[in-house]
Length: 198
Image 1 (spheres, rainbow, N blue to C red):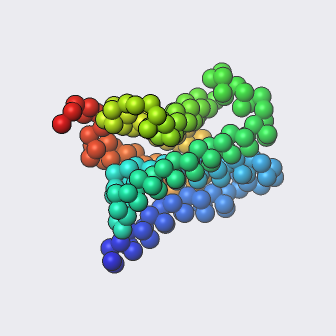
Image 2: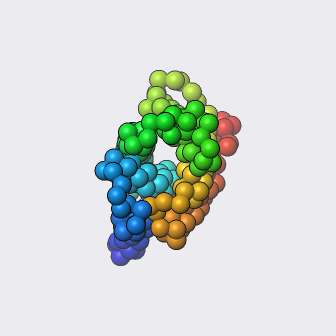
Image 3: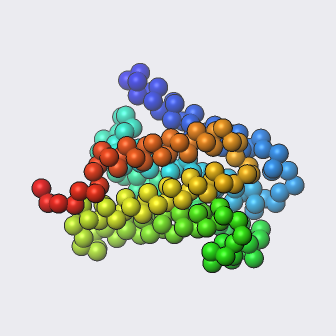
């Protein structure tokens, strides 16, 4: 019981520290409410990306396999919602910049990584919602879903690391490293590349 509480307390700290650090950023001064909301939606999206592999790999103590799957779906939907808010807020703030980003013609390198990650996240969520309808074998479906999720994670991490903005550098770097480690360990544990029948 003590280890469970300690694990959840540590996870809570890891998820909250980047958000709280960003709240003290001088970059927030004189920014519009839409820009601030968009920025924090992006930070929350990054935090949710740590939860997703932890839930998929059933690493979190105190949760059954069924509960982990349920919360994985819920976090996936929350991630899509946060991404929509992130993009919508930036669109309201600067439509021309967002249009350039969505068309992959933006001069800022981080934009392309972010847009690629966004579309991969939407596609992964789409596969998750339609799993029962598309009649793919589970292992094939899982490989596609995990592949899109990994593109989302890599794209999001590069996107976040290239931006010099609201997020504090050390907490952002630590969060991104943890996301990558959790993702790789989960992929290795689930052996998603093995689609052979057993």
